[in-house]
Image (cartoon, rainbow, N blue to C red; front, side, top):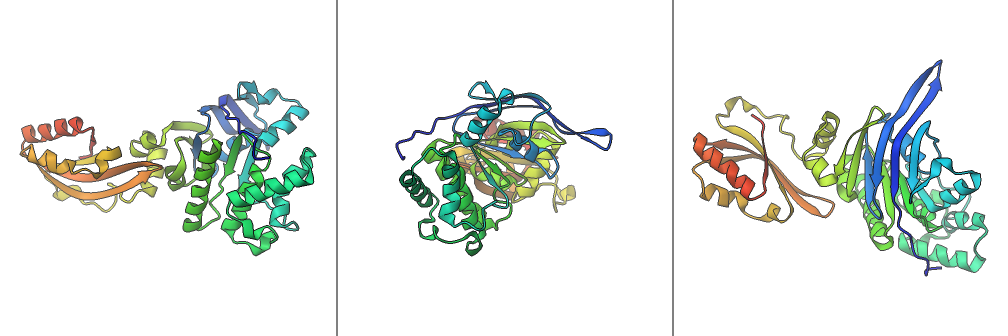
Length: 345
């Protein structure tokens, strides 16, 4: 069965609304959602509890039916599908869950085999071959005969991933897939998802309340708050220059430093500036070069260097001192070296 080619897929969400009637009034879960998810990318949706992200991801396989709006997958409006087309759609879209949702009375291999079996499309030999391929893909070859109760949380989620991939889906939906796991296991599962995305060119849509998850593997992100998308874009842009207050708070919580936290600015006579470096310049001695070419002094107060998916970045909080002319020259040097700067005080 390994000859099968994964077909790539585009998802387009247009003016999506979802309301629930409750106690004589309507609760809005989603309000005018518009998103475009590219072929083969890992797209993250982040928001606090109750923001609407779980409802949104569940509309992509119509586990939640929208009240208004359209969802196009490869230019087909899935909201118009009849029950037969909907059944086929759900075979094309895999899903993994926060609490794994495994069948406890079945072995690991039987859990992975189950979605293959119920299609009635494959022989026993084909199914056995596919299960073996998937066990290898998620690094559980030795665990096929075990039951879910004998596995760790990370192993259970690997089974969940293998089962979700059984029918060669075009899209994988991840519903808070790592929030029940410890940080080390979370990183291992995220690396596995990234590996699967690259090997299979699989489109992955994930929801989370943790910016660290977005930062680790996503290409683009949408921020949802009170049923609306308040910001979206490339993770590098949204993470390093968040525009909306909700995004700024989510980013600050995941940062190694926060300029508003524990910093007494009363004693500073110069300008307080946040510098952001992206890409190769992160590891270059740019500040040395800037200082050598100006009369200003640069004092580093706080800083972090890390990565957003494959992109290195650095952020520094610095104090600039010197004459107005010298500081103006520093700012022009920052522009020359493509260092983004933001004057905080």
